[in-house]
Image: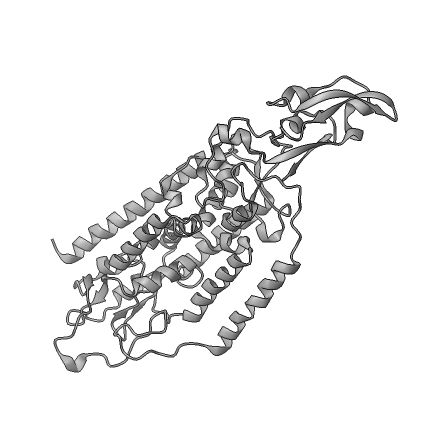
Amino acid sequence: MSSSNGYKWLRAARIAVSLTVLAAITATVACGYSCWLSTWQIIPALLAGAGAWLLLWAAVTALVGRIYCSTACPMGTVQDIAARLRRRRNGYFYSAPRPVARWSVVFAVTVAALLGISIVVGLVDPAAAYSRIIVYLGLPMIGAAAFSLGAAAIAIATLGVTAAVAMARGRLLCNTICPVGTLLGALSRYSLYHIDINTDKCTGCGLCVSRCKAECIDPSAHTVDSSRCVMCFDCTAACPNSAITLRRGRHRLQIPMLQSVEPEATAFGKTEGNTADIKTFDRRKFILALAAIPVAATAKVTGIATPLNAVCPPGSINDDDFRARCTGCGLCVAACPTGIIRPATSQLGIRNALHPVLDFDLGACRYDCVACTQVCPTGALSPLTPGQKHRIPIGKARVEADLCIEYTDNVNCGKCARACPIRSVSIVPVETSKGIRRLPHIDFDNCIGCGACRYSCPAHPRAIIIEGI
């Protein structure tokens, strides 16, 4: 079997793995199940402090480059599918690296994370982006989840932009906007195995260049930018002369006079051949990137205030930790059997948009249910047992007596007391301006904020409010 046929099988295996991973993630997200395929993604693992997964991907990248981007990343597979749907007439072409753009994004995301602007981290996390597409776009389309206009708009924009760019320029987003691609690229530049061109065999047909979705093969210098290569093996499978292969080290020409003397810049401003660094740094762009710091800091100080009455899902034990780790992926939304977990719009402030909040107009948080705490990939929601959940309140109920029908209509109701699973609501006689009325009384020490009392309330508007703690 020829080397080219071997790489065709390798490419086919890579595609099969990527589609299997994508299908598995899609199924588990849609069904609300916990799956390690979500927790092994780079940014969730980083936020969760999952050192084992981070070390695994670092080792894999150091060995064979950015294979994560072409097999394990769901948005990477989405881009490959979109690129396949609309092939460029003349194929792809080599484009110069964009080190300032790539590291400016990483810098901005890091600053945003440190300042607590979690919406920025959530928007650029490829794992969270794909989950939102499934939860806020896919599930409502089949009637399996409630529709949220704001979250759906973000999901549509994410999918539309990703698909459009992939159709036109392949993996451009991976090599400019995605912080995961940039970080892995910094390591893959020194990977043990990488794609390399044997110029003794290369005929300069340009077929590999036209197939490279990462646009990282420079035909004039016969080099491959390992920091941008996603190890898709499209180029190796297409080469008719087996001139481009996966190997250790760099090929050296048998005829020294043909050795290229022009150093080739990579996406990180350095040469592939360990020669002198190339100055590709734009001072003006760097100054503009630095300007993001005071802007982000202003957003931290003068941004929309965080309301005090929003109720977050069980497992969000530490409020600051929850908001710092949550990427708004929507996995807990999909897992909730009563559908009361919804993406926040303004309830937690613009900095924490898309974070999960509970809407007790849709139902109550089931007393023994801990489904949402089991699927969170970042650790924003701590896994709880039913027993632990029973002891940890997520909110407190408050009665608006002037809205209660016992007060307004002088009728016997008591639905809130009967609905409470731990009997924290009782009906007691109270002296009012309308005489003696039997009104709900909340035992604040025992109330866990499940919302059963509010959901059962027949008044319009409801006479019981659940406030976050």
